[in-house]
Length: 334
Image (cartoon, rainbow, N blue to C red; front, side, top):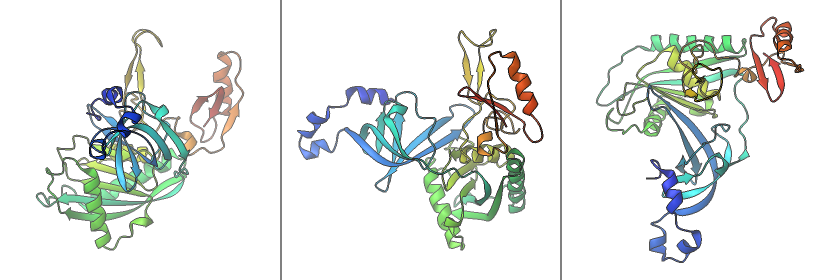
């Protein structure tokens, strides 16, 4: 119930004092108001319909599912040390909103330079087919590396170790889309093959299509190491999208307000940007992610008249600078 309707759980949760006065056996079987510290993990499941963010708290050696009544946090990345406040049932928590998550210590950015990446090709004991060979996969991640080089003005690239197909000890349709178990068994196979997992900032699991998952890609938003899972379709648009999440990028949306520019009833498109790989295409990231890879950043004082904005910005759009960004009363030319 917490996962499907956290607001209902929050509404009916027993007060802490009442719970404390119950017998231990009863107390351990019902919900509990808690404050918990741990490490945040933010994942995104990408699918045609029903894409969603998944929030977890790593604490006491367990993964706790975080389920928000409204407005989940969109400013925190995987690896951030946090304190959460909510109602717990076993390893599942209901929380009100982003205000229920307090950042204690942020993880350092990890977007520059060589990104040591391990890619593991995974199949299953009931399906050992190999729909593409290691050469194709290697070329695909070389293309992904070149994509990052272009977007970062030559500052970020992948150094990829490709691990040929590993058959893990589970069936393709019996996992109930347990991507944690798939990753764990793939890690074990890599270790058995002599790979030192701690040498890599990024891990990618490319496995045979598992219909019980439903999504075509899953990526952690940030994280060191980050992780990405690719369900069946290994192509640049998928790898670049999921590893874009790994580089701390969120989706590139659209806002459709009909006949007016802004106002009235507007519809948000989750993948609405038609010229961005974090949106609905395989093109470059837009200007917004530029802080990840800024070179020669300049601040331009805002002019009182909008007509002067474009002229002031254009005067600074030289060389490799290709974007204009407006943040908190400042114009940044990237």
